Image (cartoon, rainbow, N blue to C red; front, side, top):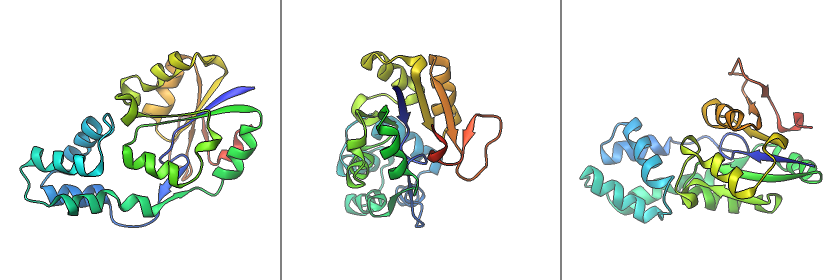
Length: 199
C-alpha cells in the first residue's frame, strides 16, 4: 500500500468555459491581474476568509468604489462552473482500494466549497487546504503535511499540474512526483496525460 497525494485545480477539477473571474474582479477594483493574483495568494489562499470578507479586503486595499455584492457574485462564479475531469471518479475508486489518498491544494474557502460540492472528499484520508493551514505549497505546505502525517515520503507519489509546486517541491522532500499534462504542453518532466496511467 502506498500514499498518493493529489492537487485539486487542474489535476482533478477545472472550470467550464466562462469569463475569467480573476480578470473581471481585477477590472472591477482597478488592479492589474498579477497584482490581484498576489492579493489572492497572500490574503485568501492563506486565510479562512469568507467571500464577503475577501471582497471587503479588496475594496479597502484598492480604495475601490466597487460593491461587495458585485465582487462576491464574481468570486462565487466558479461554484457553478467547476467540473471533475472524466477520469477522476473511476481513478479515485480504483486507487483508493490499495492506497491512502490525500488532497493538498492551494485554494480559498470557495475552493473548499467546490471540493465538497463535487462529492469527492470521502475518497481522501485527509484534505489539506492552504486557506486552513495558513501556508501555500511554495512556502512549505507539502513539508508541513508530510511531517504532521508521518508518511513514508519514499512511498508517496504526488500528482499535480504545476511543475514548480507539485513536482520540484515534493521531489526535493524525497517523494516521487508526476505532472498531469492533460493538454500535452509540458516537456522535461515525468508526465502522464490521464489519471488512468497511475498504477
